[in-house]
Length: 419
Image (cartoon, rainbow, N blue to C red; front, side, top):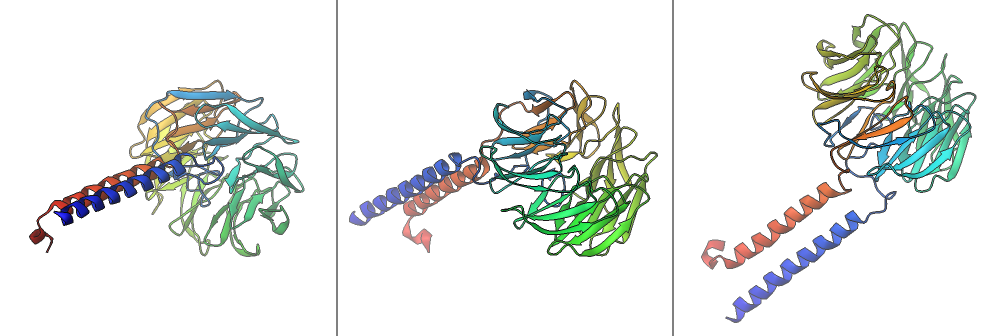
């Protein structure tokens, strides 16, 4: 009898301890400061990650219901960055905006000396973004206060990538820059033969970027030395996506290229009917998704470049697609935001904004965020963003329940069943 009472006390004590730990962790996760740690479904920079894959594991909306929209003072070409419950985006009214991801309410804005065309990158509580006033800015993510700025020789239309405390960004002065993320000090720069409008991708200690000198470059991230370059027949304004040992990038010579990321050798190319390619590709699930001139959104086989499907919009496609939850999101000059089935290209929904949509979508925590030439930032979702840390919390609570049930089960079993 005494042993049974002791066992009962042990079970209750263990269960209580597990429950208390769960409550503590739940409180810690739900109460996390908005600039402390990124969530699992955030979209912190152009095309989601350093490799610019454009792919997220986040759930994504099946309808065109708007959660909110926010009006800036200028055209929004910038692709939003979303992290820790805040949306960061630039506008051609010279401002960088921080908006509440759930409501669209303004948290802060910072005014630069020129258009903010590029997409911000948000890392370690800092916002990195370029402006046509020739500067790269580093702002405090919580309040928008200036931490540092670095002045290049011309406008900055390239979106930064931040890796290992370094900021990689291009400029219209023909250079690719590597800056110290903490201080803005120059670490190295590499001079190409044309404007660098392309957004650098970073993978395996290398920086991949295009230039208006018709080339794709691979640079050593540590010192900026050239690893290889590949010459296309036109300006390379798009941003490379790096996945599975390959670099995917478009050129204004009417071709879309797949290159070996180690050597720069051509693996395959896909030829379009017209040039002027602005859309950067998504690399996901052995497929490549990209917007082509002539109003097309295409899905190609990543292995050989064969066409899987294409969808015709009503206007020029400069927006870069985002892929999440089996869906492709992209904007077009016909004022529409499109949601397509990633496997078939079938239309799931579309939404008509007030002007052309040249911004690239971001998918974060169950919501699609995108800008428009009508000066607005839109959020599409049937409900508010998934609370930060929710996935971890659910898994933790399920594990807690399993532990409690297991303890009680084994305590109640006859001794001979525990052999």
